[in-house]
Image (tube, helix red, strand yellow):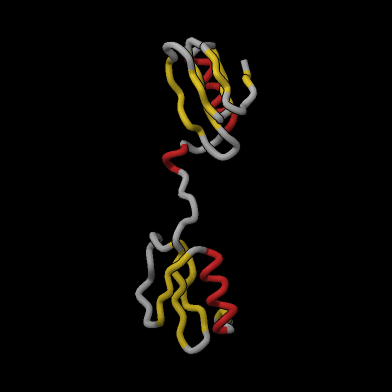
Length: 116
């Protein structure tokens, strides 16, 4: 059973899958009342697991909000641009860490280009 969001208070169960548009918040057996801003799917454990698979959303703990990026450049050329926690190749250049937007602003500010 799907229950609409906006601070849902429910005692439906016995299991509840709580999620939003981007991630799974929890999947647990309920005891008492649940209050959440998320969407709630209530049913058996098997029904909740099937709904979790159908939604194909990551767990909230796996979602990184505003990840940090690394930009490496030299002589006006972008040598590397990716997530900061990625495997970074050994390269000689100026390194800049920031959000995606900050890196894009740095590329524009310095008029950087990709190597052809």
